[in-house]
Image 1 (tube, one colour):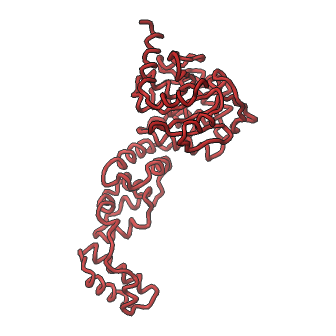
Image 2: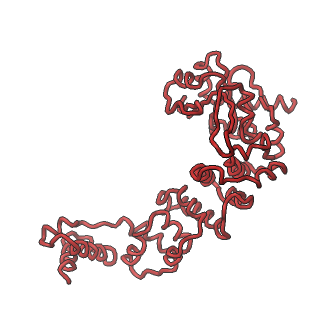
Image 3: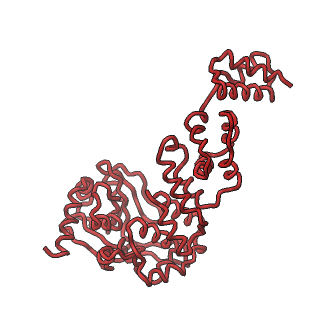
Amino acid sequence: MSKRADTEERLAAALRAIPALDRLREAAGGMPVYLVGGAVRDVLLERDPSELELDLVVEGDAGALAAALGGVEHAGGRFGTAIAEVEGTRVDLAGARRETYAEPGALPDVSPATLDEDLARRDFTVNAMAVPIAGEARLIDPHGGAADLAERRLRVLHPGSFVDDPTRALRAARYAARLGLQLEPETERLLRATELSTVSADRVAGELARIVDEPAPRRALELAAEWGLIDFDDGAGERIEQVTALLDRPPWSGVADRRAALLAALETPPARLAELAAARPRRPSDAVELARPLSAVELALARVAGAEWLDRYVEEWRDTGLEIDGDDLIAAGVPEGPAVGRGLEAALRARLDDGIADRERQLDVALAAAAAS
């Protein structure tokens, strides 16, 4: 069997394994619809078809196809895209389009186009392939993406690619790390000349967020730093690795937003977190007093900086509560004001340090502290 025949047989098998495509073919009628981009790339990499992200390009009205499918989650916008749920699978639909850029880094102006024009506007050759979802499962690869993929090579489609959209340089780091690709020499030359300053901070932040959402983001961030795209201090790579591991295990799983924590780990930690890491609280109440003012992200960064006692804070002490509240103290005759807070703090210390869980005993401790001058 020839290499091309083998490739197209694998593509056909992958298409058969995606139940949503049957419904899409039915809804499309005779409208040309293509699986494009990362989905095709990942089939060629022999990844599980059930895990593919279904990106489809329509030579026609993507919105009309989305409406015919039902279950539309989003439609419209300047790019004429739509998102639908089909057979329990998210499907991203877009009309084939061409793009022009009024100036470097600007969002593109778009207009309807053919599939070939749509593929030509994309970022890298490995993402500029398509397969029709109906009829013969033939690979449409006008820019040599399959050959680049086989050679583990990442190549832009044209010399102005990083000028049009500098965030593609950060995308290159993500793909290179995830897929084990090397920059083609001319692509590397163009990338190292990229000016991220021509795009908004929000768009740069969005690409960084996509990087840290990767299962193992460290390599991509190190590549971005190596290529001069982001600042990265000497300890950042290790912090990224440690935060990733920390938030994947109890008791830290779910404590802090992973994306926010990893983005924060790119920066040199503030001095107060180093001070927290060096602290050795003698009692649970001391630990709570130190840790309570910090956000969940700061807690995670302090833990990877060495504050091992935070494990017990997160697991045992952080959510410790009382059987009483301020209303109980006021009902017992304590005037509203600082005395109420003083009493509740004393009761919480007694709960943490001495295990006083009984409501009446907590109230006694709080009233005594509230009465003290």
